[in-house]
Amino acid sequence: MMTETNINDGTEQRSMERVKGTFDFYPEDKYAKEAILDTLRTVAERANFKWVETPALETIKLLTRKSGDEVRDQIFVIEQRGAEQFGLRFDMTVPLARMFLAKQKELPKPVKWCYTTRMWRYEAPQKGRLREFYQFGCELFGPATAAADAEVIGVVINALKEVGLSENDFVVKISNRKLIQGLLYDLVPKDKMDEALRIIDRAPKTTSDDVVQQLEKAGIRKVKEVLRLLEMKGKPQTVFADLDKSTLNELAREGLAELKAIATLVPSPSIVLDLSVVRGLAYYTGFVFECLDKQGKYRALAGGGRYDDLVQLLGGEATPAVGFALGYSTLSLLLEELGRLPKQVPAPQLFCVVIDEAVRTYACTVVESLRKKYTVEMDIMGRKVGKQIEQANALKVPYVLFIGPDEAKQQKVKLRDMKTGKETLLSPEDIRL
RNA sequence: GCGACGAUGGUGUAGCGGCAGCAUAGAGGCCUGUGGAGCCUUUGGUCUGGGUUCAACUCCCAGUCGUUGCCCCA
Image 1 (cartoon, rainbow, N blue to C red):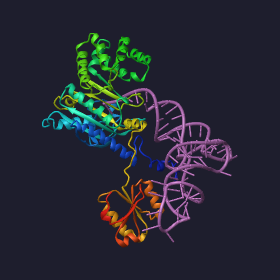
Image 2 (cartoon, rainbow, N blue to C red; image 1 turned 180 degrees about the horizontal axis):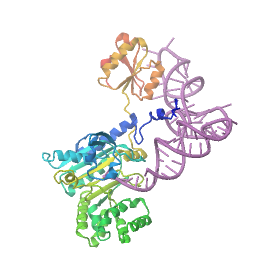
Image 3 (cartoon, rainbow, N blue to C red; image 1 turned 90 degrees about the horizontal axis):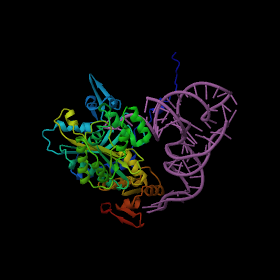
Image 4 (cartoon, rainbow, N blue to C red; image 1 turned 90 degrees about the vertical axis):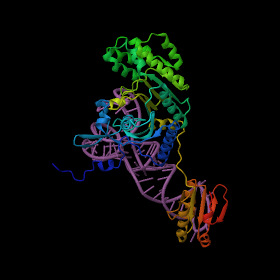
Protein backbone atom coordinates (compact mmCIF):
# COMPACT_ATOMS: atom_id res chain seq x y z
CA MET A 1 0.00 0.00 0.00
CA MET A 2 1.45 3.35 -1.00
CA THR A 3 0.17 5.29 1.95
CA GLU A 4 3.28 7.26 2.74
CA THR A 5 2.60 10.93 2.52
CA ASN A 6 5.25 13.34 3.70
CA ILE A 7 6.70 10.85 6.11
CA ASN A 8 9.79 12.36 7.61
CA ASP A 9 12.15 9.43 7.84
CA GLY A 10 15.04 11.64 8.77
CA THR A 11 16.82 11.39 5.43
CA GLU A 12 16.42 15.10 4.91
CA GLN A 13 18.18 15.84 8.15
CA ARG A 14 20.80 13.17 7.64
CA SER A 15 21.60 14.49 4.19
CA MET A 16 23.09 17.50 5.94
CA GLU A 17 25.45 15.45 8.05
CA ARG A 18 29.08 14.77 7.39
CA VAL A 19 29.94 11.42 5.85
CA LYS A 20 30.86 8.89 8.51
CA GLY A 21 34.55 8.78 9.29
CA THR A 22 35.35 12.10 7.67
CA PHE A 23 36.44 15.34 9.30
CA ASP A 24 35.68 18.98 8.57
CA PHE A 25 38.66 21.26 8.85
CA TYR A 26 37.42 24.61 10.11
CA PRO A 27 40.00 27.42 9.83
CA GLU A 28 41.66 26.55 13.13
CA ASP A 29 41.95 22.87 12.15
CA LYS A 30 43.02 23.60 8.60
CA TYR A 31 45.82 25.96 9.59
CA ALA A 32 47.02 23.51 12.21
CA LYS A 33 47.06 20.61 9.76
CA GLU A 34 48.81 22.53 7.01
CA ALA A 35 51.38 23.93 9.43
CA ILE A 36 52.17 20.45 10.72
CA LEU A 37 52.29 18.84 7.29
CA ASP A 38 54.50 21.65 5.98
CA THR A 39 56.90 21.14 8.86
CA LEU A 40 57.03 17.39 8.32
CA ARG A 41 57.62 17.79 4.60
CA THR A 42 60.38 20.31 5.17
CA VAL A 43 62.25 17.77 7.26
CA ALA A 44 62.10 15.27 4.40
CA GLU A 45 63.14 17.92 1.91
CA ARG A 46 66.20 18.70 3.99
CA ALA A 47 67.22 15.10 3.37
CA ASN A 48 66.58 15.79 -0.31
CA PHE A 49 63.32 13.87 -0.62
CA LYS A 50 61.22 15.44 -3.38
CA TRP A 51 57.53 16.20 -2.95
CA VAL A 52 55.19 14.22 -5.20
CA GLU A 53 51.49 13.58 -5.68
CA THR A 54 49.45 10.89 -7.41
CA PRO A 55 45.81 10.71 -8.47
CA ALA A 56 43.31 9.84 -5.78
CA LEU A 57 42.09 7.15 -8.15
CA GLU A 58 43.82 3.97 -9.16
CA THR A 59 42.51 0.87 -10.83
CA ILE A 60 41.29 -1.82 -8.47
CA LYS A 61 43.67 -4.13 -10.22
CA LEU A 62 46.67 -2.13 -9.09
CA LEU A 63 45.35 -1.51 -5.60
CA THR A 64 44.74 -5.20 -4.97
CA ARG A 65 47.78 -6.45 -6.82
CA LYS A 66 49.78 -7.12 -3.73
CA SER A 67 47.08 -8.18 -1.35
CA GLY A 68 44.01 -10.26 -1.02
CA ASP A 69 40.29 -9.69 -0.77
CA GLU A 70 40.35 -8.38 2.77
CA VAL A 71 42.05 -5.32 1.35
CA ARG A 72 39.47 -5.00 -1.38
CA ASP A 73 36.77 -4.60 1.25
CA GLN A 74 38.48 -1.48 2.54
CA ILE A 75 38.74 0.27 -0.79
CA PHE A 76 36.22 2.89 -1.75
CA VAL A 77 35.17 1.68 -5.15
CA ILE A 78 33.85 4.68 -6.97
CA GLU A 79 33.26 3.88 -10.60
CA GLN A 80 32.78 1.03 -12.93
CA ARG A 81 33.14 1.23 -16.66
CA GLY A 82 33.01 -1.95 -18.58
CA ALA A 83 35.38 -4.41 -17.01
CA GLU A 84 37.38 -1.74 -15.21
CA GLN A 85 36.94 -0.66 -11.64
CA PHE A 86 38.51 2.29 -9.92
CA GLY A 87 39.18 2.81 -6.28
CA LEU A 88 40.45 5.53 -4.01
CA ARG A 89 44.03 4.99 -2.94
CA PHE A 90 44.39 3.54 0.55
CA ASP A 91 48.10 4.18 0.88
CA MET A 92 50.88 5.82 -1.12
CA THR A 93 53.36 2.99 -1.29
CA VAL A 94 51.57 1.23 -4.12
CA PRO A 95 50.83 4.36 -6.22
CA LEU A 96 54.40 5.59 -5.78
CA ALA A 97 55.76 2.20 -6.74
CA ARG A 98 53.64 2.46 -9.89
CA MET A 99 54.96 5.95 -10.50
CA PHE A 100 58.48 4.75 -9.97
CA LEU A 101 58.35 1.83 -12.33
CA ALA A 102 56.79 3.94 -15.08
CA LYS A 103 60.07 5.87 -15.24
CA GLN A 104 62.32 3.28 -13.70
CA LYS A 105 64.85 3.34 -16.54
CA GLU A 106 65.41 7.06 -16.70
CA LEU A 107 65.36 7.97 -13.01
CA PRO A 108 68.78 8.34 -11.42
CA LYS A 109 69.07 6.29 -8.23
CA PRO A 110 68.44 6.68 -5.46
CA VAL A 111 64.89 7.91 -6.02
CA LYS A 112 63.66 9.73 -2.92
CA TRP A 113 60.09 10.95 -2.79
CA CYS A 114 57.91 12.34 -0.05
CA TYR A 115 54.22 13.17 0.13
CA THR A 116 51.69 14.89 2.37
CA THR A 117 48.29 13.96 1.12
CA ARG A 118 44.99 12.32 1.77
CA MET A 119 43.79 8.77 1.34
CA TRP A 120 40.77 6.65 2.10
CA ARG A 121 39.99 3.35 3.76
CA TYR A 122 36.49 1.96 4.15
CA GLU A 123 36.69 0.69 7.68
CA ALA A 124 35.23 1.25 11.12
CA PRO A 125 36.25 4.72 12.32
CA GLN A 126 37.89 4.88 15.72
CA LYS A 127 39.97 7.32 17.67
CA GLY A 128 42.91 8.19 15.46
CA ARG A 129 41.47 6.25 12.56
CA LEU A 130 39.20 7.89 10.05
CA ARG A 131 37.95 6.82 6.66
CA GLU A 132 39.47 9.85 5.02
CA PHE A 133 42.84 10.74 6.46
CA TYR A 134 46.15 12.45 5.80
CA GLN A 135 49.62 11.05 5.83
CA PHE A 136 53.12 12.29 5.48
CA GLY A 137 55.53 9.72 4.14
CA CYS A 138 58.70 8.95 2.27
CA GLU A 139 59.64 6.21 -0.15
CA LEU A 140 63.20 5.47 -1.16
CA PHE A 141 63.84 3.30 -4.22
CA GLY A 142 67.17 1.81 -5.25
CA PRO A 143 69.56 1.03 -2.44
CA ALA A 144 69.25 -2.05 -0.25
CA THR A 145 71.62 -0.54 2.26
CA ALA A 146 71.36 0.04 5.98
CA ALA A 147 72.25 3.64 5.17
CA ALA A 148 68.96 3.98 3.29
CA ASP A 149 67.01 2.43 6.17
CA ALA A 150 68.79 4.74 8.57
CA GLU A 151 67.99 7.76 6.45
CA VAL A 152 64.30 6.91 6.49
CA ILE A 153 64.25 6.40 10.26
CA GLY A 154 66.18 9.60 10.68
CA VAL A 155 63.52 11.52 8.80
CA VAL A 156 60.78 10.10 11.02
CA ILE A 157 62.60 10.98 14.21
CA ASN A 158 63.55 14.46 13.05
CA ALA A 159 60.03 15.09 11.76
CA LEU A 160 58.49 14.21 15.11
CA LYS A 161 60.98 16.40 16.92
CA GLU A 162 60.39 19.27 14.52
CA VAL A 163 56.65 19.35 15.26
CA GLY A 164 57.32 19.71 18.95
CA LEU A 165 57.84 16.22 20.36
CA SER A 166 60.89 15.23 22.31
CA GLU A 167 62.50 11.83 22.35
CA ASN A 168 60.80 11.29 25.69
CA ASP A 169 57.42 11.52 24.01
CA PHE A 170 57.78 8.65 21.58
CA VAL A 171 59.54 5.36 20.94
CA VAL A 172 60.68 3.90 17.66
CA LYS A 173 60.37 0.15 17.73
CA ILE A 174 62.56 -1.52 15.18
CA SER A 175 62.53 -5.11 14.09
CA ASN A 176 63.36 -7.31 11.14
CA ARG A 177 61.20 -9.90 9.45
CA LYS A 178 64.15 -12.03 8.46
CA LEU A 179 65.28 -12.14 12.04
CA ILE A 180 61.86 -13.12 13.39
CA GLN A 181 61.21 -15.66 10.71
CA GLY A 182 64.69 -17.07 11.12
CA LEU A 183 64.13 -17.41 14.85
CA LEU A 184 60.71 -18.95 14.34
CA TYR A 185 61.93 -21.32 11.66
CA ASP A 186 62.58 -24.20 14.04
CA LEU A 187 59.66 -23.40 16.32
CA VAL A 188 56.81 -23.10 13.89
CA PRO A 189 55.80 -25.33 10.99
CA LYS A 190 56.17 -23.61 7.66
CA ASP A 191 52.44 -23.49 6.94
CA LYS A 192 51.80 -21.88 10.33
CA MET A 193 54.31 -19.07 9.87
CA ASP A 194 51.82 -16.42 8.75
CA GLU A 195 49.45 -17.27 11.56
CA ALA A 196 52.29 -17.12 14.06
CA LEU A 197 53.39 -13.71 12.80
CA ARG A 198 49.86 -12.47 13.06
CA ILE A 199 49.60 -13.58 16.68
CA ILE A 200 52.95 -12.02 17.46
CA ASP A 201 51.86 -8.79 15.83
CA ARG A 202 48.91 -8.34 18.14
CA ALA A 203 50.60 -9.79 21.20
CA PRO A 204 51.38 -6.38 22.77
CA LYS A 205 47.67 -5.67 22.90
CA THR A 206 46.74 -8.82 24.82
CA THR A 207 47.91 -10.77 27.84
CA SER A 208 50.53 -13.48 27.54
CA ASP A 209 47.91 -16.05 28.53
CA ASP A 210 45.90 -15.07 25.49
CA VAL A 211 48.96 -15.35 23.32
CA VAL A 212 49.63 -18.84 24.65
CA GLN A 213 46.05 -19.81 23.98
CA GLN A 214 46.15 -18.46 20.43
CA LEU A 215 49.44 -20.17 19.66
CA GLU A 216 48.15 -23.47 20.99
CA LYS A 217 44.95 -23.08 19.04
CA ALA A 218 46.99 -22.52 15.91
CA GLY A 219 48.71 -25.83 16.54
CA ILE A 220 52.06 -24.35 17.45
CA ARG A 221 53.92 -26.56 19.89
CA LYS A 222 56.91 -24.65 21.10
CA VAL A 223 54.88 -21.96 22.74
CA LYS A 224 57.38 -21.25 25.47
CA GLU A 225 60.15 -20.55 23.01
CA VAL A 226 57.95 -18.23 20.98
CA LEU A 227 57.01 -16.32 24.11
CA ARG A 228 60.66 -15.94 24.95
CA LEU A 229 61.20 -14.22 21.62
CA LEU A 230 58.45 -11.78 22.40
CA GLU A 231 60.21 -10.81 25.58
CA MET A 232 63.36 -9.91 23.74
CA LYS A 233 62.99 -6.21 23.60
CA GLY A 234 64.72 -3.14 24.84
CA LYS A 235 67.82 -1.18 24.04
CA PRO A 236 69.18 -2.57 20.77
CA GLN A 237 72.66 -3.29 22.17
CA THR A 238 71.21 -5.33 25.04
CA VAL A 239 69.07 -7.44 22.75
CA PHE A 240 71.95 -7.88 20.31
CA ALA A 241 74.08 -9.20 23.14
CA ASP A 242 71.34 -11.69 24.00
CA LEU A 243 70.98 -12.84 20.44
CA ASP A 244 74.72 -13.20 19.97
CA LYS A 245 74.69 -15.87 22.66
CA SER A 246 72.21 -18.05 20.76
CA THR A 247 72.93 -20.07 17.68
CA LEU A 248 71.11 -18.56 14.74
CA ASN A 249 70.30 -19.86 11.32
CA GLU A 250 71.36 -17.97 8.23
CA LEU A 251 68.15 -16.01 7.78
CA ALA A 252 68.19 -14.84 11.38
CA ARG A 253 71.86 -13.89 11.15
CA GLU A 254 71.14 -11.82 8.07
CA GLY A 255 68.29 -9.98 9.74
CA LEU A 256 70.35 -9.41 12.86
CA ALA A 257 73.25 -8.00 10.85
CA GLU A 258 70.89 -5.58 9.12
CA LEU A 259 69.47 -4.37 12.41
CA LYS A 260 72.92 -3.91 13.91
CA ALA A 261 73.99 -1.80 10.97
CA ILE A 262 70.92 0.40 11.29
CA ALA A 263 71.31 0.77 15.05
CA THR A 264 74.88 1.94 14.58
CA LEU A 265 73.84 4.56 12.05
CA VAL A 266 70.89 5.90 14.07
CA PRO A 267 71.99 6.08 17.70
CA SER A 268 68.77 7.67 18.91
CA PRO A 269 67.74 7.14 22.54
CA SER A 270 64.15 6.60 21.44
CA ILE A 271 64.98 3.48 19.44
CA VAL A 272 64.14 0.14 20.99
CA LEU A 273 64.31 -3.28 19.48
CA ASP A 274 61.03 -5.15 19.66
CA LEU A 275 60.58 -8.41 17.82
CA SER A 276 56.83 -8.26 18.14
CA VAL A 277 56.74 -5.55 15.48
CA VAL A 278 55.70 -7.31 12.31
CA ARG A 279 53.60 -4.71 10.50
CA GLY A 280 50.83 -6.87 9.14
CA LEU A 281 51.49 -9.50 6.56
CA ALA A 282 51.78 -7.37 3.47
CA TYR A 283 54.74 -6.37 1.44
CA TYR A 284 57.48 -5.91 4.00
CA THR A 285 60.52 -8.10 3.47
CA GLY A 286 63.11 -7.23 6.11
CA PHE A 287 63.58 -4.23 8.33
CA VAL A 288 60.31 -2.92 9.81
CA PHE A 289 59.58 -0.25 12.38
CA GLU A 290 56.76 1.37 14.20
CA CYS A 291 56.61 4.60 16.09
CA LEU A 292 54.37 5.01 19.13
CA ASP A 293 53.72 7.58 21.81
CA LYS A 294 55.67 6.77 24.95
CA GLN A 295 52.68 5.59 26.96
CA GLY A 296 51.35 3.51 24.10
CA LYS A 297 48.11 5.35 24.55
CA TYR A 298 47.32 5.90 20.90
CA ARG A 299 47.58 3.99 17.69
CA ALA A 300 50.92 3.97 15.91
CA LEU A 301 52.19 7.41 14.93
CA ALA A 302 54.18 6.05 12.03
CA GLY A 303 55.19 2.77 10.53
CA GLY A 304 57.28 1.49 7.71
CA GLY A 305 60.00 -0.76 6.54
CA ARG A 306 61.71 -2.40 3.66
CA TYR A 307 59.74 -3.85 0.76
CA ASP A 308 62.26 -5.20 -1.71
CA ASP A 309 59.79 -7.24 -3.76
CA LEU A 310 57.01 -4.77 -4.46
CA VAL A 311 58.35 -3.08 -7.58
CA GLN A 312 59.00 -6.41 -9.24
CA LEU A 313 55.60 -7.64 -8.16
CA LEU A 314 54.00 -4.72 -9.93
CA GLY A 315 55.87 -5.60 -13.10
CA GLY A 316 59.05 -3.55 -12.79
CA GLU A 317 62.65 -4.57 -12.55
CA ALA A 318 63.55 -5.88 -9.13
CA THR A 319 64.28 -2.80 -7.03
CA PRO A 320 64.89 -2.65 -3.31
CA ALA A 321 62.84 -0.02 -1.52
CA VAL A 322 62.18 1.31 1.94
CA GLY A 323 59.65 3.80 3.24
CA PHE A 324 57.27 4.89 5.93
CA ALA A 325 54.00 6.70 6.49
CA LEU A 326 53.07 9.00 9.36
CA GLY A 327 49.38 9.70 9.94
CA TYR A 328 48.05 13.10 10.87
CA SER A 329 45.13 11.79 12.97
CA THR A 330 47.18 10.18 15.70
CA LEU A 331 49.90 12.81 15.59
CA SER A 332 47.39 15.62 16.07
CA LEU A 333 45.78 13.77 19.01
CA LEU A 334 49.14 13.47 20.72
CA LEU A 335 50.15 17.06 19.98
CA GLU A 336 46.79 18.26 21.21
CA GLU A 337 47.21 16.35 24.46
CA LEU A 338 50.65 17.87 24.96
CA GLY A 339 49.32 21.34 24.09
CA ARG A 340 51.66 21.60 21.13
CA LEU A 341 49.15 21.76 18.33
CA PRO A 342 49.39 25.16 16.67
CA LYS A 343 46.02 26.77 17.25
CA GLN A 344 46.17 30.17 15.68
CA VAL A 345 44.34 31.32 12.63
CA PRO A 346 46.29 34.19 11.13
CA ALA A 347 44.98 37.54 12.45
CA PRO A 348 44.50 40.51 10.17
CA GLN A 349 47.22 43.12 10.53
CA LEU A 350 44.83 45.99 10.22
CA PHE A 351 41.16 46.70 10.84
CA CYS A 352 39.50 49.60 9.08
CA VAL A 353 36.75 51.32 11.07
CA VAL A 354 34.25 53.02 8.81
CA ILE A 355 32.92 55.83 10.95
CA ASP A 356 30.19 56.95 8.59
CA GLU A 357 28.58 55.21 5.61
CA ALA A 358 29.14 58.43 3.66
CA VAL A 359 32.89 57.72 3.51
CA ARG A 360 32.62 54.04 2.59
CA THR A 361 33.77 54.61 -0.98
CA TYR A 362 36.91 56.36 0.17
CA ALA A 363 37.49 53.68 2.84
CA CYS A 364 37.14 50.93 0.28
CA THR A 365 39.72 52.59 -1.96
CA VAL A 366 42.18 52.83 0.90
CA VAL A 367 41.60 49.24 2.01
CA GLU A 368 41.94 47.94 -1.55
CA SER A 369 45.35 49.51 -1.94
CA LEU A 370 46.50 48.30 1.49
CA ARG A 371 45.42 44.76 0.67
CA LYS A 372 48.15 44.58 -1.95
CA LYS A 373 50.52 44.31 0.94
CA TYR A 374 48.72 43.58 4.18
CA THR A 375 45.91 41.43 5.51
CA VAL A 376 43.19 43.97 6.14
CA GLU A 377 39.73 43.51 7.61
CA MET A 378 37.11 46.23 7.44
CA ASP A 379 33.58 46.63 8.67
CA ILE A 380 31.08 45.28 6.17
CA MET A 381 28.26 44.84 8.66
CA GLY A 382 27.45 48.54 8.88
CA ARG A 383 28.05 48.47 12.62
CA LYS A 384 28.46 51.37 14.94
CA VAL A 385 31.97 52.50 15.77
CA GLY A 386 31.98 50.91 19.23
CA LYS A 387 30.97 47.54 17.80
CA GLN A 388 33.57 47.80 15.08
CA ILE A 389 36.27 48.29 17.66
CA GLU A 390 34.94 45.36 19.63
CA GLN A 391 35.25 43.26 16.52
CA ALA A 392 38.81 44.51 15.92
CA ASN A 393 39.67 43.54 19.49
CA ALA A 394 38.10 40.14 19.09
CA LEU A 395 40.28 39.64 16.03
CA LYS A 396 43.36 40.70 18.03
CA VAL A 397 44.30 43.22 15.40
CA PRO A 398 47.40 45.23 16.30
CA TYR A 399 46.41 48.34 14.29
CA VAL A 400 43.11 50.01 13.60
CA LEU A 401 42.47 52.54 10.87
CA PHE A 402 39.79 55.17 11.46
CA ILE A 403 38.18 56.67 8.41
CA GLY A 404 35.47 59.30 8.90
CA PRO A 405 34.37 62.51 7.20
CA ASP A 406 37.34 64.45 8.65
CA GLU A 407 39.89 62.01 7.27
CA ALA A 408 38.09 61.67 3.94
CA LYS A 409 38.08 65.43 3.46
CA GLN A 410 41.88 65.55 3.80
CA GLN A 411 42.38 62.25 1.92
CA LYS A 412 44.08 60.92 5.05
CA VAL A 413 43.52 58.14 7.58
CA LYS A 414 43.98 57.89 11.31
CA LEU A 415 46.12 54.94 12.37
CA ARG A 416 45.89 53.72 15.92
CA ASP A 417 48.40 51.43 17.55
CA MET A 418 46.18 49.23 19.71
CA LYS A 419 48.92 48.42 22.14
CA THR A 420 50.06 51.96 22.94
CA GLY A 421 46.86 53.77 22.03
CA LYS A 422 48.87 56.23 20.01
CA GLU A 423 47.10 57.71 16.99
CA THR A 424 48.61 59.36 13.94
CA LEU A 425 46.99 61.09 11.02
CA LEU A 426 48.70 60.23 7.76
CA SER A 427 48.25 59.57 4.06
CA PRO A 428 47.22 56.01 3.19
CA GLU A 429 50.36 55.44 1.16
CA ASP A 430 52.53 56.28 4.17
CA ILE A 431 51.24 53.38 6.22
CA ARG A 432 54.04 51.06 7.30
CA LEU A 433 53.28 48.24 9.66
C1' G B 1 31.56 -7.24 10.06
C1' C B 2 30.55 -8.30 15.73
C1' G B 3 29.86 -6.41 20.99
C1' A B 4 29.35 -2.54 24.88
C1' C B 5 27.99 2.41 26.00
C1' G B 6 26.00 7.01 24.52
C1' A B 7 23.02 11.15 21.70
C1' U B 8 19.09 17.77 25.08
C1' G B 9 20.20 25.14 21.39
C1' G B 10 26.29 26.28 17.32
C1' U B 11 29.29 24.63 21.82
C1' G B 12 29.27 22.87 27.05
C1' U B 13 25.64 21.15 30.29
C1' A B 14 20.85 20.56 33.91
C1' G B 15 16.27 18.20 34.31
C1' C B 16 11.72 15.33 34.70
C1' G B 17 6.16 10.20 32.67
C1' G B 18 2.88 16.45 32.86
C1' C B 19 5.73 24.48 31.10
C1' A B 20 12.92 22.05 28.62
C1' G B 21 16.46 25.48 32.26
C1' C B 22 21.57 27.47 32.74
C1' A B 23 26.31 29.00 30.74
C1' U B 24 28.81 30.33 26.47
C1' A B 25 28.94 31.73 21.41
C1' G B 26 25.73 34.59 17.55
C1' A B 27 22.44 39.15 16.32
C1' G B 28 20.73 43.89 18.26
C1' G B 29 20.29 47.95 21.99
C1' C B 30 22.13 51.21 26.10
C1' C B 31 26.55 53.90 22.78
C1' U B 32 25.32 59.19 16.10
C1' G B 33 33.97 59.53 15.99
C1' U B 34 37.30 55.40 19.66
C1' G B 35 38.61 49.72 23.58
C1' G B 36 38.31 44.30 25.13
C1' A B 37 33.84 45.66 30.53
C1' G B 38 28.87 46.00 32.26
C1' C B 39 23.59 45.86 31.79
C1' C B 40 19.30 44.73 28.62
C1' U B 41 16.70 42.42 24.39
C1' U B 42 16.69 38.52 20.98
C1' U B 43 17.60 34.06 17.72
C1' G B 44 18.24 28.94 18.53
C1' G B 45 17.36 22.51 21.20
C1' U B 46 15.27 17.00 23.22
C1' C B 47 19.07 12.38 16.51
C1' U B 48 15.27 9.64 13.08
C1' G B 49 11.11 6.30 12.78
C1' G B 50 7.71 3.27 15.32
C1' G B 51 5.42 1.47 20.00
C1' U B 52 3.41 1.87 25.29
C1' U B 53 0.52 5.96 27.73
C1' C B 54 -4.75 10.52 28.89
C1' A B 55 0.29 12.48 28.34
C1' A B 56 7.13 10.53 26.06
C1' C B 57 12.84 14.56 25.93
C1' U B 58 12.03 10.78 29.78
C1' C B 59 9.93 4.00 29.21
C1' C B 60 10.33 -0.01 25.05
C1' C B 61 11.93 -1.51 19.85
C1' A B 62 14.49 -0.44 15.32
C1' G B 63 17.63 2.76 12.48
C1' U B 64 21.44 6.61 12.12
C1' C B 65 25.57 8.83 14.09
C1' G B 66 29.38 8.97 17.93
C1' U B 67 32.84 6.73 21.60
C1' U B 68 35.16 2.27 22.75
C1' G B 69 36.68 -3.05 22.54
C1' C B 70 37.25 -7.12 18.88
C1' C B 71 38.45 -8.09 13.54
C1' C B 72 41.77 -5.54 10.34
C1' C B 73 45.59 -2.00 10.01
C1' A B 74 48.22 -3.10 3.23
